[in-house]
Length: 105
Image (cartoon, rainbow, N blue to C red; front, side):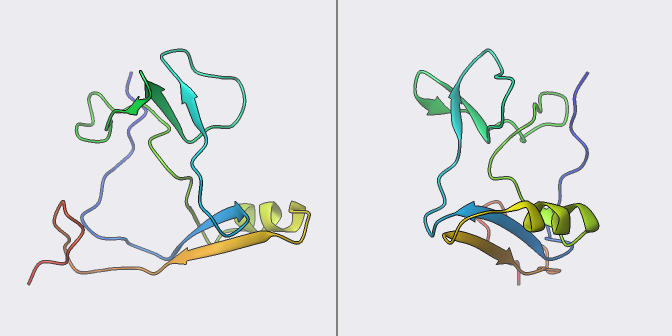
């Protein structure tokens, strides 16, 4: 059964990415076997396959882990250690977006 929840053509609320250092590096893992630890995406022959194109074929995870401002997010931030931690923010975008990421006019 698919774990697909929902897709959006807008970003309904501000989202955050917790990161160790200024460069965002996705945690890739060679598929098809899923690891037991944390990862952002599976690779196949060194390449990433888009998986969110259809709810029937979606398999998590599918890219950078982003979270809304919730109590769980606050617990994760409180648990962070070190002086290179970065928290990136993506603001809400309520205009319809096209597949290339540009808002429709």
